[in-house]
Amino acid sequence: MRFVPAGTERIFVSGRGNLSDIAELRRQAMAEVDRAADLASLEGVRQRWLGPKGVLTLELRTIGSRPPEERKAFGEAANRLKGEVAERLEARLSALRAAALDLRLAAEREDLTLPPRRVRLGRLHPLTQTIREVSRIFATMGFETVEGPEVEWDHYNFELLNIPQGHPARDKFNTLWISNPLGGDPDRPVLLRTHTSPMQARVMEARKPPIRVIVPGRVYRFEATDAYHESVFFQFEGLAVDDRITMADLKGVLYSFARQMFGGERKIRFRPDYFPFTEPSAEIAIDCFVCGGTGGECRTCGGSGWLEMGGCGMVHPNVLRGVGYDPSKTQGFAFGCGVERIAMLRSGTPDIRLFQQNDLRYLEGF
Ligand code: PHE
Image 1 (cartoon, rainbow, N blue to C red):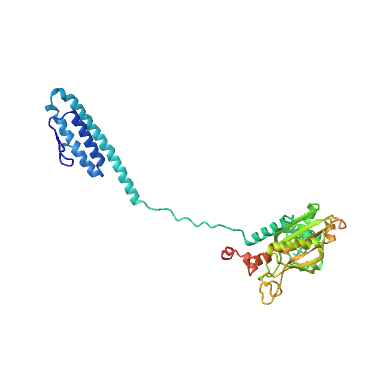
Image 2 (image 1 turned 60 degrees about the vertical axis):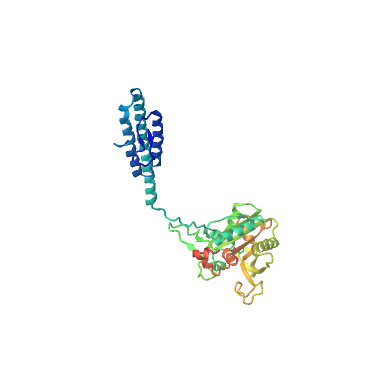
């Protein structure tokens, strides 16, 4: 028996082959099957080993010419090898087919995914930011933040605040009345609250002194709008009630607030004013932090050097009596300020209407 190099038509020419030659044939055949890199060369390998003129086909034909004592063992071994090669060919065939399919799928792959949408992080509205900062500062002085109804009874918005029917102070508020479609009680008129002050009466009715609350919220007035006026805007009310509250407490609290909000150099101006529900009453202004109070050409304060923040005063005895308190034992102070005014100052917003217009170009810059 002799071997010829692999790749020639016949690599094995049978002579007086024996069983150890079968082992060598197995090694060669398996190696060739494993080496076949595509379907065509695998078919070539099959023909060369199992085809009509294949190595193993011819080998099996030599059985008859072998010594009788060898035939059985040789025949069995050669047949088993034929089966093993066929099996190996089959396995290689499916492996090559699977690999070919993978290649095709990879080549034909389409990317059907859309690019992801940009995630836009939201942020708090500038007015919300301002309200939270106000609440935080007053919380450091022991004030609790509470909220009240925007649709209010005349009773709380005016009556309990010492503004009875026909009182000229009613003219100060351009009120939006609500007509109840179900008829309602004509003696209990309903309106969109014109200020957060009705919460003074509501809180005093519901609680006992000592009271310290901040009430932020929307208020409504029948207003012609311009850069400084909106018919819907925000205020925050402050109320402190106890048995030895004086105007000095009011001033101290407002000084502390102004300095925490606008910086340690701020000055506050109190000027006499009039509100039916406080006595005495004052208007609150802070010195302009843009021009430092010098005024002149300053556009933030309009040259006056002062920025108006709101009103304040000692809770009027009639208001205390109205909620069942004894003014000789209990006193309180109250103040009310505009949120937009503060937000405009903090953010350099030139027009109050920008807060409501929902223009993202503005809101995203805040
Ligand atoms: N409610 C008043 C206003 O809207 C402001 C104010 C509040 C004045 C509390 C005094 C005390 O004009």
